[in-house]
Length: 299
Ligand code: CP
Image 1 (tube, rainbow, N blue to C red):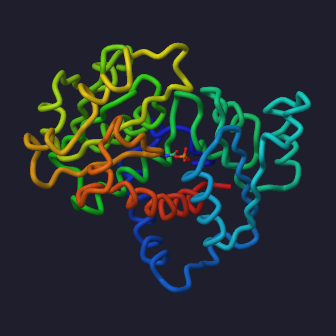
Image 2: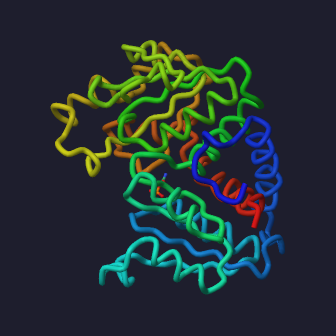
């Protein structure tokens, strides 16, 4: 692949190959000296038009550990503020003989457009409500590290699925791997065609937690024209998880969340910090997975 835009474009063999490569970087990332020369001489630019803590930092760390030169472009202080378009920005950054552009943008489709007009590789670091493929890759990597594989697994995605780029990327990747995907959310926060996505909608917390893995998602208030739930307190009561809800879950249920977490809304604080919460493992694994993706793109 020249670019990584969507997990829909990645075959099962390619997914496994990315996870295997990430596994070797995971070992390197636990060493005292965490550097490899794999991308020495390459230039990677992080173009983030939306806020980020985990994705931007981990792409920068990943690039540095691969010995690439990594530059952060900050939209707020760039010439986009003077009216320069996204494509002109991409073409100008590319003209500096850059190799990989990591793009986060509020518009769905921005990464695909950038990739079409760019000789440099483009990695989608989140485009609007569309996709966030490296988040899905680190999610499946995190699941495989604990469960050992994907056969017979069921994953429930719960929360604001309609506005979640993570959900869409997770669904494509998990379905490609043959994993059963359940969705649990208020009707206003479900995608339009859950069955078309190959997912089953469940209507109770009890059914949601009867899974091997729960991926809880944040309410994306910034992407909702008006709040699509009556109140956060009611949402937390009927669709958030607390310790009591887990009495119906298998003992080895894994809890994932892409972050940032609204403690007390989608998960109680106790669950965020519980032993079966892999939220910080996801963050650690994001570096290894992004190193693998950057190494594996064709340039
Ligand atoms: N999961 C994720 O994309 O987090 P950030 O928005 O902090 O990058």
